[in-house]
Length: 157
Image (tube, rainbow, N blue to C red; front, top):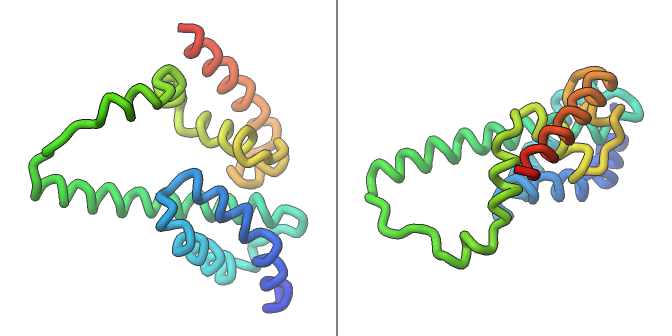
């Protein structure tokens, strides 16, 4: 991939990747993490499969988000060890959250959540989600069906 082709790839996919990141990390981190995604993409540009660039970028973004969360968890644990908690969440913030959905979502496995998120939130087709997850389209279809069924059952309870 030439620098010009990569520039075109960046211009075409920067917004969807930023939106993907915005749904997963603090807004203040989106720009830096988006830059990190494209920096990694540039260094691994030979791995890009023609026609599946966006799912490939989603896969990279998933790893970048995981790394950012690990860094944040480490930082937060350190800070928490230094200061005692001085407040609890407000009643309003608890009431506003859809507790049932959050609880059901938390009971899904990580792979189920990732599959549902790519298809439902990111709007990827099964083939694109398969490329992003590094598994077959058939495996995505099966995982998606099972995750939807499990989520529906959890929401009934």
